[in-house]
View 1 (cartoon, rainbow, N blue to C red):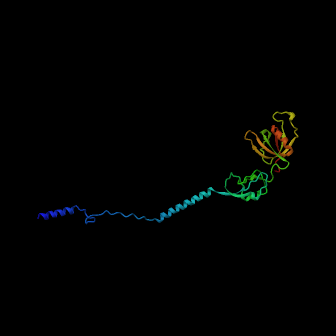
View 2: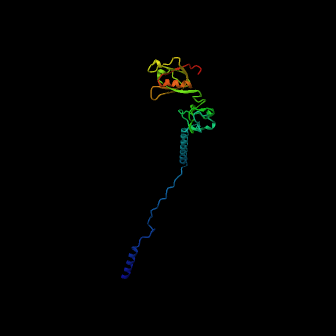
View 3: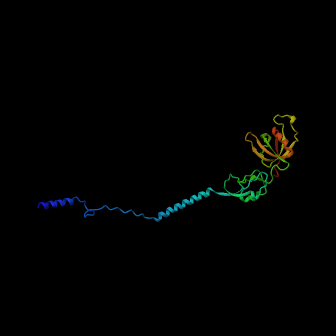
Length: 236
């Protein structure tokens, strides 16, 4: 009887030390939730695509509006002052439109063929309306003399290119009658340039005169004894 009891206790102790079996009746296991399913919304997707397209169109519009260009005439090959401009010397390019930029429209290119360069024209530069002339000044038998004149030695009417003037002698600052030429000594001239001096209150007037008169006029100008008289502008 005692042995049976010990045996039973021994078996019970052994069985009590064993871990409980998984999935035993009466035990619950925590369930892992499944990931939520993403729902596609076609309306939202189309709205996002529309915003992208509108943004792209806005960028294109801003670019095109900021790069408004026009066709202008440019110099293809360098043309030195006085040389005749040929068709091979010119080309058309696209430039940004700017009211302050003096350009020659591409449609006027042919009008400059056969004219002469008024100054050295470098390759790759834009052609301006004043860059070419029918004739180069001074021509044969002519000279250009620059006169730095104060207000009292000029007419009160502002001078412009093309004005017909006469160059006359004055007594000068010294007022020496011995060096004063006769009042009949005058030289006809044409104004070819007018610019204000940056160093003094004088106006530099470039006049086109006969070649044999240039030396005398230059001597007057160097001593401040040259004055200009404006002649009639009728018929200009």
